[in-house]
Length: 282
Image 1 (cartoon, one colour):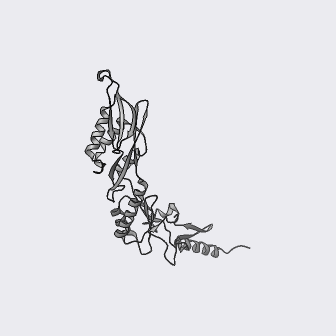
Image 2 (image 1 turned 90 degrees about the horizontal axis):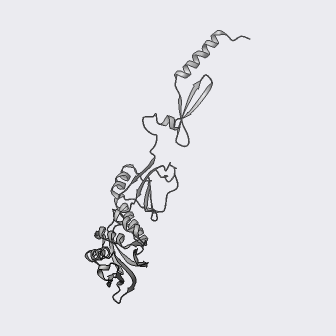
Image 3 (image 1 turned 60 degrees about the vertical axis):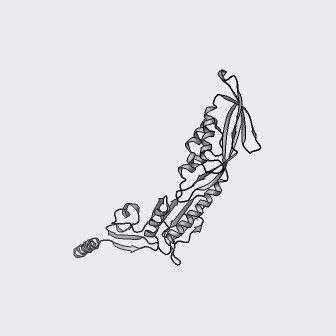
């Protein structure tokens, strides 16, 4: 049975009309968009949220990505621009990070929770320097040079910076001595006994006093005031060589308290009620 020529021509016209009409755009239940085309082979469905098509649009369909800032002012500025009444903010005290989920779920409707803002608290340079030598035995000259380079971090009480400078200079001047012992005196200082090893000195003996405790004034992060942190001197003598150690008093507690201070300041700057913890993975 042959097909009338007029019908074939009509089908071709209909097909051309379908293709000329362009794609039909359909919204998906997950918030995406599909384009449906008529082709000679049948219907073709294209997911417009696919990367290769999404980048051709005039603008993205939704905000997404994670922005990292380093101070409270930057966090507050970005949060004010992109947050809404359903945005959520979390503070991880152990990691020292505050995370805002700007497109968090609404009470009755889910959202993507993929547009985020993170305040990563970075230790100050001074804090990082002292943390790098905490509980680490260091040769006396290296330790003396460290003290001399970081005198600005010394708190005035119980040992002022000027006295710490004298101690550093004494260590640098006693490089040709053999240390024999160190004892704690009645005053609480450590008295280190030594003997000159140069011929010109005739083997003169002596001792030098080092305070057992001194204090630092350090800000863990840029947005907090300095904390007073006690540090204890420790020493070890091996083969006449002296090595020294500074032990900071519970620096982890200082960091945690400093993070809490930043959290309070962020709450004041943004008006957000910050929850303790971490948001769900996007």
